[in-house]
Length: 213
Image 1 (tube, rainbow, N blue to C red):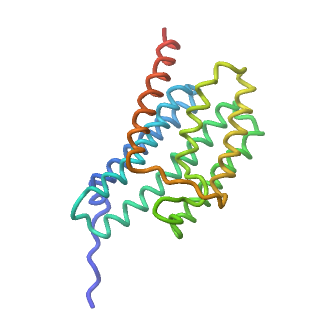
Image 2 (tube, rainbow, N blue to C red):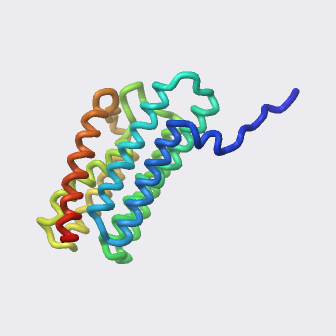
Image 3 (cartoon, helix red, strand yellow):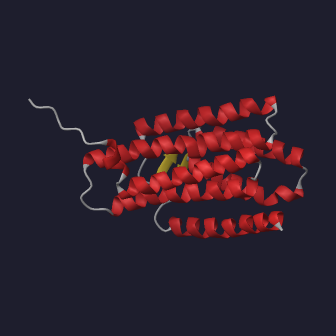
């Protein structure tokens, strides 16, 4: 019996849904860079676009005809790896940076990373409860909520707000690995996400303009 011929890795990288996934990864890398630099409005913009690309890679994959089984499996694995960066590494670094890398923020960063890894591993085995329901809160909701919380940053002293986002992220992490059924936002919800990302990008972009002027 002859072995199945293996194709090159970059063959998969040229697949349109995977290109969309990689654009999400690029957005996450930019967000990490700006979080490390302490430019939080720019980091939040990167976070939001990482979510948007994460939603659209699946939409594109479902609409494309003639994709092979291997392309589908590779796309699922790539998406999961990128989710660890976008929704695990990125919020962990943002929390550490906002907390001025205080040692007390390290446990929080670990919890975010650990719950992200546990949730994604569990999801890769069991998937959804049904076609419209997740077990626990999906990871992309974390950063969508985090971006909303940052709208109120200027109402608090920096140290107070750092504790607030610490608490919020710990609550979200607990919900990520809970057994609470949560709805899968799909279909027309993508239009709501697009509107949210555009409005929030405009707001935080305006903040960046104010900071530079």
